[in-house]
Length: 210
Image (cartoon, rainbow, N blue to C red; front, side):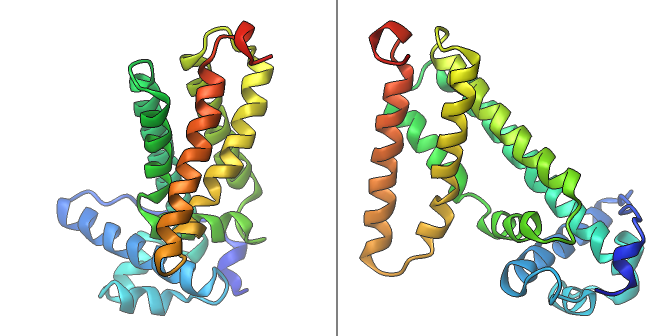
């Protein structure tokens, strides 16, 4: 990688609305390019061109490619945290089918951001603490969700179940990329798989979750 990697420089937050729109466009373009080409192959010049941003403006908001990647991971993490909190808040009134649908639909939201985040999480150039924090926060939120629908669930068991559920959910974006009728069949089967597991979790401990 270039010397950009060696200097940890934070992104500069825009102060005006036009600047916020510009930053959003830059980040959307970066997400698409990182997902398409990978972190190392995508260049700041390509990101500027894709977002229709002058290269000087790009570097003003994001002094390094690393700072841009970090901002994308933060945006993705904030999205996951906010949406999982919303699902948890509503979970007590949801059926197992509705809760499963909420989780599957979450994994289908902002697919470019999600694909970019997966690339960045796996990239050796991505900060290890950012990767581990994102995984830990998502895992913890799902465990909290499971406890919210079954108050008798031991915390250790909830964390194990959350890890398994997270691995299943992580497959959803890849299944959504399949072409033809098989895509809908795969997503329908995954919804049913998650529904059955959620229904199992929602039963009180004495009725099957031990």
